[in-house]
Length: 254
Image: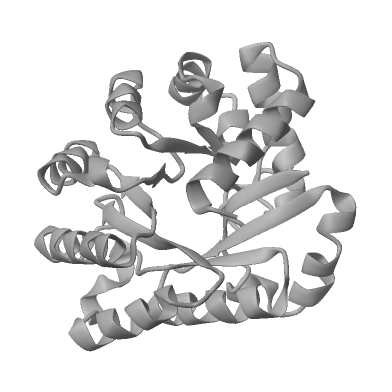
């Protein structure tokens, strides 16, 4: 069975057929899914999905693009959501200098504050970092993030940065991008990193793999991600699914 460690089934892209899609997951080889909050509302909706579906778990946090509306009252409410039985992580949190929707200093402030929340609740973190390689790593080192655990979502940086994160005990989230012909750097990272440090993720409804690139993504497409990792590492698809599943269970405690 496959473990999708990062999806957004609360997204409006699934409003018309969410239940139909999710009810077929386990019968088609997807055993567990973590639905990850991006906005504050998304965190609440992730918990609702986790309550409804036995195989769905929740991560609660606010994406850097959405932190402009954060305040301590919402942090307190996020902490309450962390106390839910099926909340397994704080995320997705971090920095995004690509869209740059929020001032970088505001992003940094709430990244640190949400890491503090993870420390308080003893949950792992799911880190979003786009075009912010140095600042993300510098902040995590300054905040002693090695005392937490977690995953660098949609990993997109160099082998050198991958080594830094793995030395801190962090996993690398690998999704549909690894199947893109032009994703040479990510393919090199996957070849370099031990399988024990990789997690599977879709980021559904985004980043569908080849041959479905550009369409709405879902967890069933992880078979194409597994096949590409298998090709790169010269390991069977069964082994990729097994090891990444056990990595996810170990990190998220499910």
